[in-house]
Image (cartoon, rainbow, N blue to C red; front, side, top):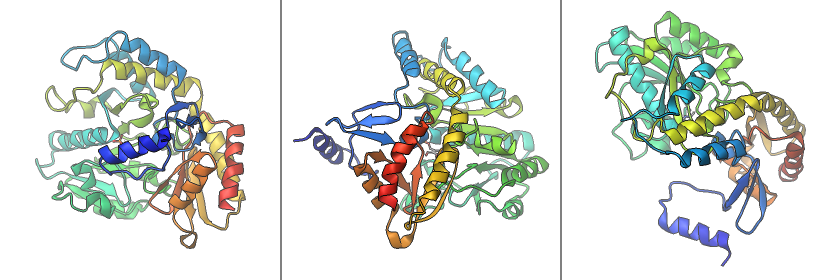
Length: 399
Ligand SMILES: Cc1ncc(COP(=O)(O)O)c(C=O)c1O
């Protein structure tokens, strides 16, 4: 039997069915390209949900990982290691924050930011213990833990998983008045995705984040920017907040912090906030391990030294315009920032997944989000020639 068929059948037999993947098996990857076991090549336009901003298997990050594997991969935080400080300093410089708290997955970093915000609320702002409220947004996506799905508005993410964690309020995304009205004396933080990625690449109105920043400062509320997907050059700036010159109180980062080699996430904040965390308050066996730090440090170097934000902005503008110029009868809207791009399929044309399957047959991998949106988010190393290669094939499927 074909190797791909065997791999799919084994996965379906022995893994829980918590995903519905495209029927393609990846056994090798380099840059923007991936290959199946039979040697068929595809252009990856998903980048592992934006974890591979630097391109697959980046040689510099791979070399750093291999070098560190030969020394020491894991120490736990029971001891110091000789790599974490360097990585933390670099990430502090990039985020312009005093400290980071390293974790592993994006969801864990979100949870971490919520814990910091609650404790800051009680100990600094003076909100009565166990009464803090955090404002979140309709159509959000911040991960899958019980607390995080407690404020999801996606029915399937919540159905059957209650009871939920209290203390979260939801308001419409993009409406500053609704946000202002939701604030009470118990509000300690606002948790926002500067662009809602999983929610269908939803971009808020211009000035919204700046107004939010002003409101948070005025009301002594922490602004937490979940830039797990939008951060680290994806939208054409180091952080999507940079478009509005907004400095959130906390950045939540993950995905491309490792260039796809390893789960690495972090929260970055200034000392006046981070000081609420004391030994024993929070942690993770793997968080901040030397392998992660070596990989993360090099992954950040690659983003800066290869000018990935600039390329994402330039290629994003080119690609969005080209997609619009296809004038596809199936497309309701094309929108995006940098190389985080959503293409809405008209309801009468079917669901986005159908078009993703057709693109797969043309050698392009991408995935739907929220049923009606195709998301294009290729590695940020992609060139104009590679985008033209993709556009030729996308045109065949969409027109
Ligand atoms: C904005 C945002 N936050 C958090 C997460 C969760 O990250 P992870 O899947 O690494 O836990 C995601 C994942 O897509 C995300 O897009």
